[in-house]
Amino acid sequence: MKNLILIIMLALLSACSNTTKQTAQYYLLMSDSNTGGQKSRDNAVNIKLYLQNIRLPQYLKQPKLVILKEGNQLHFSHYHLWAESVEQGISKIVKQQLPQVTWFNKMHADAISLVIEVDDFYPTTQGEVILKGRYWLQQGEKIKLINFSYTTSLESDGFVNAVKQMQSLLILFSADIEKAAIKFHLQ
Image (cartoon, rainbow, N blue to C red; front, side, top):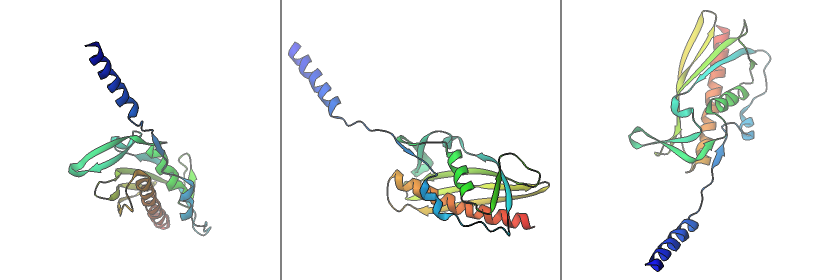
């Protein structure tokens, strides 16, 4: 009987030691490779913006990367994590990608206030990356609400590629904010 228990315990210990331990991988939305989309500043049009707020759904306010599975089920990865909050990543990309903008850290009298509200931001098991929501531009009594929706196909599987595609959607989104802010400013 003692030999049987000893054999079972050795088998269990052996099985535990043969399992590979998965380590966490951390990702940034903003990286050095994001600088390629920035254009030179045109002094003829200088927009002053104050990024007042980025509103995120609850599932994006945690560090785990998310994938949308079939049936509108979200899967939270245990080993693929954001190195900083999604809100910080979005803010950094938007600010870096708008060369026509002078950014203020506080509301300024002649600045346009920008509020971004994200509804969806994730890769899907169907091979897409989605970014949807709305943003507001406001200056005094003048206000403009703009809905946005971006979808792109994943070039290959894996979180590394998904994060790159998420970055590319934010760069497109930033360019559209800049166009809208210039138009809003000139009205």
